[in-house]
Length: 67
Image (tube, rainbow, N blue to C red; front, side, top):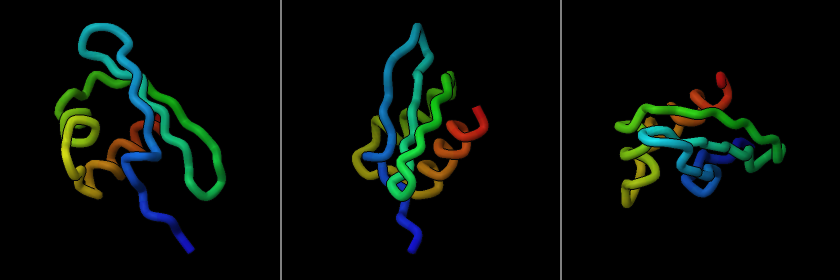
């Protein structure tokens, strides 16, 4: 069974002005991927949203996995 991506699978650490170091941890395997992004609209749509959309979470997961 495939687990749905949740905001709780991500950790956000500010890394300079307008940059975030985002880590995604797979709820199934426990593997972790990390990427630094300056895509603030994506950060606002996920980290700063009350209920982030699944599409935005999947996009952020793709950013983390592709480095």
